[in-house]
Structure formats: structure tokens, C-alpha cells
Amino acid sequence: MRHPLSWLIWAGCAAILALTVRQPLYLILVALATWLVHLGVARSSLMAGSWRALLKLGLLIWVLTIPFNALMIHQGRTVLLRLPAAWPLVGGAITLEAVLAGIVSGLALWTLLFVFATFNLAVDATQLLRLAPPFLYQAGIVTSIALTFIPQMLTSAREIREAQRIRGHRFRGWRDALPLVIPLLTTAFERAVQLAESMDARGLSGEVTGLSPRRLARMQVLMVLSLLLFLIGMLVRIFAPEWAALGLALIAVAALMILSSFYRLGRHVRRSRYRRERWGAGDSLIALCSLAALAGVLWLRHSDPARLVYSPYTAGLLPDFSLALGLWLALLAVPGLVALAEPPGEAAT
Image (cartoon, rainbow, N blue to C red; front, side):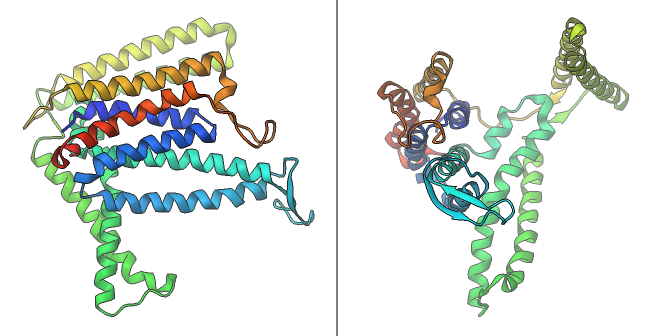
């Protein structure tokens, strides 16, 4: 079982690359690397089917973005067809360049969703909660519930639909979905509440000790004042450039006040740990390869940013490809090889 921090590093690097790169060939490489990691971690995860259903929904959204982009953006030299100019918004030329731009945008969004789904298969929600700083113990529970809500809801939808079919219900249209929606929402919220209660009962969320209600209230007021001071500093820098130094000083003071409040609050949070994760050689390999891929692409973005961007409106229809950059992106697939080399019981949590 790999350390959750190594998977967090991989997911962060892959997500940054999916958001940074706007060239379809490189995005396909990121998606293929994520697919290999997905194969490795999905072998031992019970939620793999639920996330696959979400990925199929992402594919549907991707398909819908292509005609939407083509209908809204009437630019490009290769005209496929023309709609009447009198039609609002959609009237005009439908170009091949607009279709390709929609494909690239949808591919970037779907790749980001794929990275998110793979990360949630590799790391359990309780592990993420342990990684959260002590002062974010309440936000950690909310985040854990949010991450598990969608896959649990998809699993419940499949179970309820099968039960309704056994009872003789037939889904012929959206009007027949009422017997599915109400039990689905009820079951999803019940499971979310049960998860929160179980985490709190096991001491995973944290508990504030040694602070009186008055001291806790003063600390919360100080946090609010720090955020207001930070906002004032930002406004001064934006709307009063001649006072930029004062705005920067206010931002620095506010940041120090916020960090000080977080540190003092974290010292009073007590958390229980049943078992501590160990960092192994495989975790180091995952982290180093992920950071190397990110560093290589960011260096290229600084030296030659045009190579990471593809615009069918200004460039040719076929994008260029750099073998060196492709090899850098291929490093994202190394965690998948590490996961596949492990026994199925240890590949994922």
C-alpha cells in the first residue's frame, strides 16, 4: 500500500499538466499515462465501477462541447456548412477549426476528470483526512464526504434501479425516474451522515482541547480580521498603484496573522491514529517521476510556451510533436507500473 502523499503529488502534477497543456497529442499522453495508473489502482478498489460511470458521463459532456463550440464560434478557414445568418448566436459558418478547438477543450476537461477519478481510487477518504493539517479538521470531514458522495451515489443508483426493475418498474422516459430519484437522494444523504459519524467516532476528524470558548472566539475573530486586512491590502494594490508598497505590507502582516492563528489552533487539536503510513522506495519513485514530468513541462513552458499550445485558428490542422516533451510526460505512467508490479491487495487502498 503506497503512501497517500505520493499519490497526492502524482495527482497534483498530472492535474497541473492537464490544465497547462493545450496540445491534443500531449493531452492524449497524459490521459494514457493516467489510464495505466487507473489499471493499477482499480484492481483492488470496490468503487472502480462507480468512477467508470462518472467517466462515461464525462465523455458525454465532452461530446456535447464539440457542437456547442462549433455553433458559438464562427472562426476558421475550412467551412463545413453555413447556418442562416438570421439565427441568433448559432447563425453563421460552422468551421472545422471550431470543431477541433472544441475537441481539444473537451479532452482537457475529461483528462482532468480522469486524473481525479484515478486519485480517488488510489487513496481512501480517511487517508486524505489524516493528511489535512490539524486546524482544518472540520474542513477535512466535509471534503472527505464530498469526495465519496458521487461514487456512492452512482453505486446506489445502480442498486436502486436493479431493485425497481425486479419489482416490475420500467424506465421509459424521464417521467419514470421519480421512483429512482427520491430513494437515491435519501440513501446518498444517509450514507454521508453515517460516514461523518463514523469518522468522528473513530477520532479521525480531530477534537479541540485546552481552549475555553472565550479564547476560541477571540481566535476566530482574529482570523476574520486577518482576512479583512488581507482583502484591504489586495484592494490597495489593485486600485491604488501609488500605494503598492503599503498594500504589500498589509498582505504580509495579514498572512503572518493567519498563519499564527492556524498554528495556535492546530496545537490544541487532538487526533488519533490507528496506523501510520510508511514512505517506501515506491513512493519516492512515484513522487520523483511526477515532479520530474512537471518540472520538464514547466521549463519548456518558460523557454518555448508556444509548443504547449495548439490553436487550429492560427496554426495548421495537424499539431507538432516533440519526442523529448513526450518522454517527459511519459514519466506520469511510472506510478501505474509501480501499482501493476504490486500484488492486487496492495495496489490500492
